[in-house]
Length: 85
View (cartoon, helix red, strand yellow):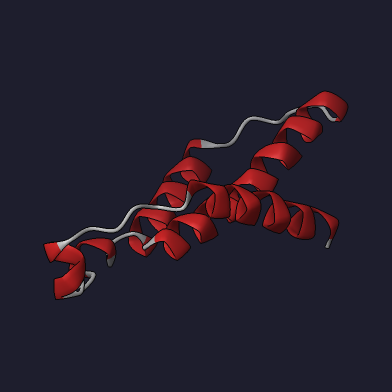
């Protein structure tokens, strides 16, 4: 579970940083309504499997604490790698 969160957060941060840099240097073009709908459809389709995720019984009995420091390090490390490649 924590690795899923770390992966998603690590993917989104470079996109947001790139978008911020893009707005600073390039003229921003608005998205067409069909592009927004397609983007939402693709994202929603990829998230449809989340409710069917199987959770281990021991996780249900005693939930574990998230290692926020690990997620923060993962996000910053992954963001640096993704933005330079």
